[in-house]
Amino acid sequence: MNWKFINFTAIAAIGICSQVLSGAPAKGITLGCRIPKDYFETHGKGESDITVHAGSYHLALKDANIEKYNIMTYSSMLPGIATLVPQPADMVHGCVVETIMSTCTVSKGERGTAGIVYGWLYNRKTNEKYGGLVCENYGDYSPDELETLLLSSLNELYVNGFEEDYRLEDIKYLHETIIPQKKYGTALVSLCFISYYHPVL
Image 1 (tube, one colour):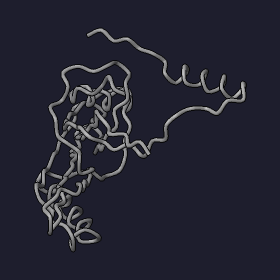
Image 2: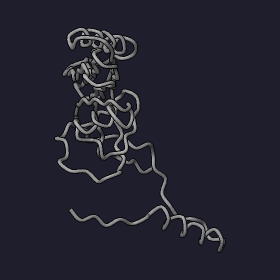
Image 3: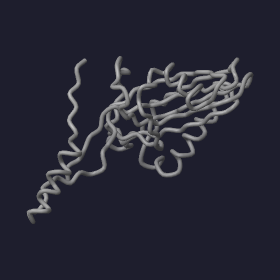
Image 4: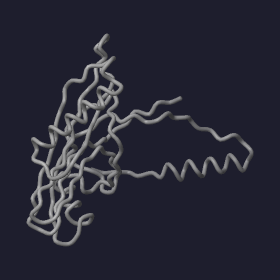
C-alpha cells in the first residue's frame, strides 16, 4: 500500500499566521466533539523475562495484532453509531488507535484475566439504538468469575441512569487469560476505534 503524507497542521498554521500578520481574519471551520464510529475487537497475551511495558505488554499487543499502533485509552461509552467491523489486516506503523481496553499484568506462575463486557441501549418507546455501555475489569479470576463481576458492573451502570428509558440488550463478553512461565505476563482485550464522525457546527 502506498501512502502519501501531507503535514496539514503545518500548512494550516502557516496559512493562519500569514492571515493574522496581514490583518485578515483567519478562515476555518468549527467542529464539534468527534464521535467514534467503526471499531474492532481484539485480544492477546504475552510474556517476558525482561520487563512489562516493552516486554510482556508489547508482546500481548503483538498477539492482538495492534503492536504497531500508538495506543490511547478512554472510558466506557459507545455511541449509537458505533459499528463492529473486521480487524484491518494491515496498519500504518505509528498511527494512533483509541481504545477501550482491559489489561492484566502478573508475575510468573500467577493467573491473570482481563475482560470487557458491553451491551446496547434501545429506547423503550421507539426501539432506536441509543448507545452502548462498556465495563472493564481484571485480576486473578477464572473467565466465568470475571464475567459474573463484569455483568454486575454493567447492570449497576444500567440501573443508575438508563433503565427507565432504555432496554439493555445484545450483551457481549470478551476475555483473555495468562499464567506466564516467564517473569512477567500480560493479558489484554480491547475495542479499537478506527473511524470517527466529525460534526461541523
